Length: 302
Image 1 (spheres, helix red, strand yellow):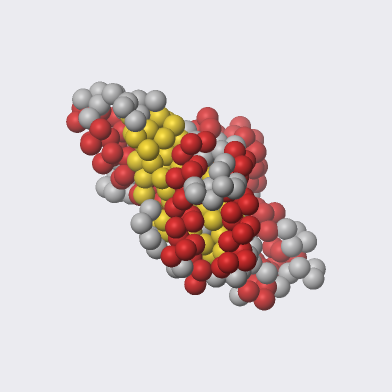
Image 2: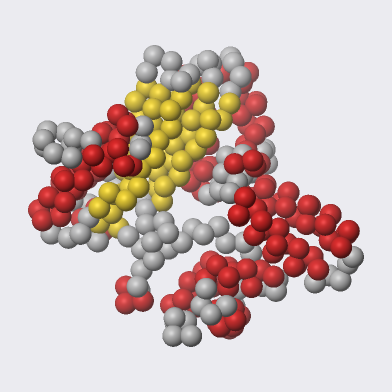
């Protein structure tokens, strides 16, 4: 029980919206396991689903670079962490992050390949240059994540939320759209979808792309909730199916309601855009990186 502190209770409350005492009880019942505590609260009807947004426990920048070609484009997003926000506002650090993002274009955002790529003008690898910069900047920094989208024909649109410098900020989103249609209209559509992704935090682009473990976990929670109603199993099964559809509408990009108009599913928004673009439009995928996502602060950092 030593792991159950005021900070962990507060974190669970922020993730679920449940009461402080309920959160404390949930952690006690699950031996401090945060995910299990979320499920415990949900099964009791005391919390909403947590999308594991996590707490932003690292500083630094998320940066984006996009390189169009004759027909399509390559887009990449990288996360470089620092210990303090002060360093994230340092021009030397910002230039390094932009350089790393531009270098990532050549390897389509592959993190391990990026680490080994030659840093521009340095005559050494990206990883070696970052290590050298630790001494120059005076605090621990590191290349944490990188990802990319390649579209053979169409566009890779992007959006940076909370920009600190050009092309870098707290959240970076890429959206790939496949189409032979008007590039300017595709870019405008993609930018709006990217803004939606930043706000709505979808777990996947399509239902079939959801992590099976996430779906299984959701089904288990929904079944427990339904059984609490005392209804027979055949009715419970239908209740779970209905609630699972609601989960998809909340968690899958194409099924979500577009935040720009608040009424149209994203799937329909893309279908409707085909007429203006002059050709069918297909969502290739999206990437959303948020600074410090999934990294926990120790209690003494609160």
